Amino acid sequence: PTQTTYRRNCLQAIPNRETMTSATKVKRTRDPLSPKPILDRTILLNSLKSRGIVLKNGQLDLFYQLLHRSGYPPLHEFVGELRGEGAANTIDGDENSSLSANGSVASSSINVINQNNNPILTKNSIPSRPGRLPQLPKAFLDFLYDVSCQCDTRDNETKFVSLTSKVQMHQTSADGTTTKIAVELQDGHVVESVLMRHEGRATLCVSSQVGCAMGCTFCATGTMGIRGNLCSGEILEQLVHASKILLLSHEVKGRLWESQVSELEIDFGYKDKNFLRIKCDERSDVTDATKPRTNSRKKIQKEKRMDLIRNVVFMGMGEPLNNYSNVLIACRAMIDRRTWNLAHNRVTVSTVGVVSRMRDLTRDLPEVNLALSLHAPNQAMREKIVPSAKGTP
Figure 1: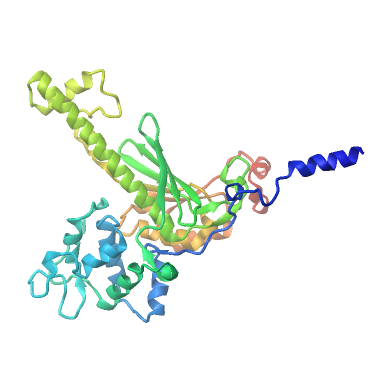
Figure 2 (figure 1 turned 45 degrees about the horizontal axis):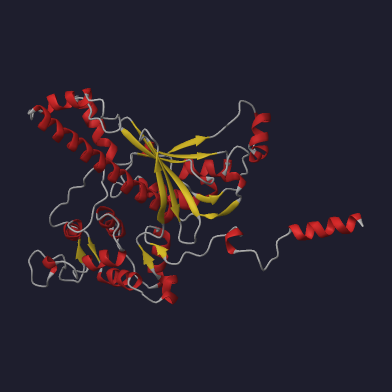
């Protein structure tokens, strides 16, 4: 009787399969990318190869440069501008038209696109030389138009978009130095990025995987297990989202300063900026997050640098070297002078010790930094909290 009662209680405690909701189920794998991210260079090149389209050296880099400086608008709008469909100054017969005689499109279209979209800030501008502008082939633009304007959901397998992910939420700390960003991927998984503002620089911590297979006991991601890799485009999209958030916060901060200065102009009747900065510093209702800096050239220069990301570290979710190929492509895009133009020593890949891939990274991309996370003063203690350390004594 005791065993029967025990089994009955256990059966009652187990929920019926029919009553289980989808919300209680945990998604353990990733869905195929549909639509595909245009920022994933490998996927785009494979699609072009399947269509028999071959690009010359520098043409794909030019496309990514134009897309970057236009602020990553919807792809069909961006391609329409390149094709001259949405710009008044790209009409046939206009001497300033971006369409050339052979049907290709010159990079002067960037001026048209920047008029309608907010650009992503770039560290160094790249001057163009008249008469030597690279051109985008018409076949390539027609391909982009076809894969970006597909409305039928059945064709999503061949569709490309500018951004496949979105910001689910972002929270900024009370002192305004740290912003936590939850990025929702197209298949419903969520990865985290962290934007850190220090004096004179902004650093972004990005994720490379959904979950992690290393099983470190101190890491919350390690308890999830591995659910899939991020493609290189999804890694770069974290940089796009964080850059827009950083630029917006910088603009809001600037507007707060302007409002404070305007109030002081009314209160004191002065328009001298140095005097207003001093008075603004003396006011008790101005917080440190919105207080203007003193009139120091070095401090003003550091403040201007806070409007774009200058450092990227792969210390978010996942083990970067277990997603080696995608992380390698993303790092190369980050240090590309045509787009993000990050300094080589400002990109850091952190690992718990995938030795074979550490050797590969030093050979394939020696320009970036490699950080080894030890987490313990000796090997015995490290093996307890980092299970993968047992294979690399």
